[in-house]
Image (cartoon, rainbow, N blue to C red; front, side):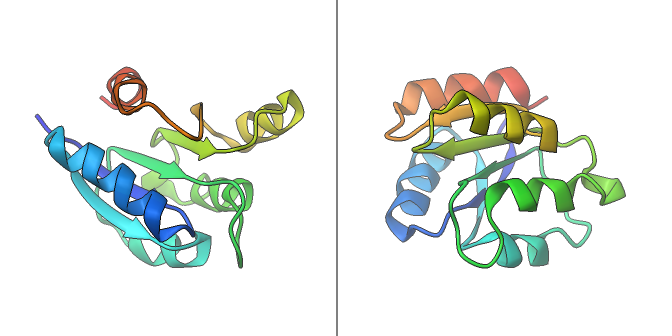
Length: 121
């Protein structure tokens, strides 16, 4: 059964590619263009997973995760980072903020779907 997934990325092309990949696998997708926009989607709607970029204007991915983790309904939702960053320090910072996992761009669709199946119940 498909999952409800929120994608947060300031790149429209990345949002579209990720959305296409997920929708073709049977998932329902919502798309936000940055962290501030993403917070408007977190108004009680149920999501099975959030996928976020790191580098975004207004509210970056790590700041977004910190904000999500204090919202009771979303405190335990799996969050995957999808970013060009691969530095261990950034991964640790994201993990400390509450990220569940990390996928480096450019991503392989099969790997993304594999990661989703691992973390989203």
